[in-house]
Image (cartoon, rainbow over all chains, first blue to last red):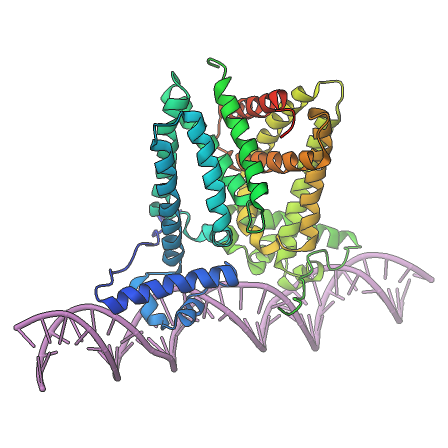
Length: 210
Length: 210
DNA sequence: GTAAAATACGAATAATTCGTCGCATTCGCC
DNA sequence: GGCGAATGCGACGAATTATTCGTATTTTAC
């Protein structure tokens, strides 16, 4: 296979004046609108530009391609979420298990709020997922958990912690994806509780080594 | 919203003569090839037809649209998998917990074998997922587990079992998705063991009622 | 052998798509 | 007020797409 030119996905140039800053903001807002009201399939530069009240040309001034817009939304989303999670995990005034439960609960609630956007972004994922910038985000999430598992799994090897971080990330992400806007508070709590029982139960009784 | 015309996704007409049966088979095989070698994004009726050594027109004789091909692949895949799982769960000569562990192990190994196709089908999912025929498959999987959980969670309400079936289906699916072709046997076993510990541990110590 | 049904073909069509380019307008600053 | 840089415009080119339809070929039934 020929060494494919990886598509750039970062901003083409940074907006300098206020009007262009606003323009970028408008585009992102419009992008969310198109993505959720229409669908990932109908996510089109023309549609986004029109909704934003901006011309396609202007859009391409700041975003090198369609994928870059999606990626930017994903970055912003992850920034919001990870800030919250990081705060919970770092709060050493509570024992690790409790922090884990709080994290699950908070995470699921966050996911419910952004359910529509998340679902659409997931559908569009194949478009931006392969970019190197996207990998960096995954890695960041992974590190977040791996560090925390140092507390939950005393004596575990780095490799063991990494495997667990992998698994927990996967599980939480998947369960988070099932939480839609029409889940009631009780539904979310139920799922969070079960998941909390499952994980903390596992950590408590974890076989010494295998 | 106008009552959208749902896209048909079933076969347009059944092949009758042997040559047409072969043609459909060729198309499906070619579809797998295109999906895995290329990608969901490049999955095109023209490309599939060319690879199958068949004309586009012939393709449309039997498949009403592109989505129908993808859906058919998904149906076949699920038929293979569910048959195996059903067999494991139904074998009452082993205790439920052991069956659960066997199921997880077998499932993950199955997933590894078909990893490429599965990943591509997942990417293409937005195209066929919303069809009513597709919902039926999900429901079938759900019933499979709900029934089994009657054994694992004696005394649990139907609703409780349904929630668990939901959760377990989600978790297994997600973990299965992480298993790629380059996972070693040891890797798969490790994941299966952890998942088995987690789930069966939970079932064993499940709080009486909440 | 022949007629009808089934099957196969593939060029043509109609829609969409992304991304660019040359030019017009506005801003920041002296 | 005026000048260069930043910004904004939107028609347009080039490419890809799904799907149809009129016609040609093959099979089946009698």
